[in-house]
Image (cartoon, rainbow, N blue to C red; front, top):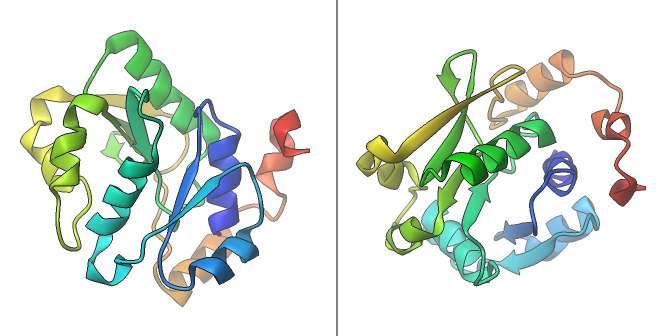
Length: 180
């Protein structure tokens, strides 16, 4: 599942892909393979999601204007959704850009550099949700095609994903030479 997320990320317009891993980082890194990502190990993973967020922020290129947060349990986020956020950010200069699928907010989320300090102060098992909420006036919603990507948190979620998702590897259909 995580390999699909990585494949989609590297097939997008992202300048770099950083994979933040915690528990069993070496095993997971070996299992997903090499797709052009840089792996960062979050040794504080047990203290909550915010530590992974901070580890990723520390690792990005210091010249990056924004960051796109992808979740490892949402393999249905396609490169086109990522690219739509990047295009919107470049043309409309919003501080926070997020996709909507049929009018419903989803992932991934793009956050501009001016908000990085606030993201660094998030603690516990929280992601960027509070920062987004406190800057709701700066949120640009971008309609993207497709269905709302679902979290895959349980065995039942995984089985439902397999039942809905085509067996054909969708990356092969993109024709991106970087994946050959």
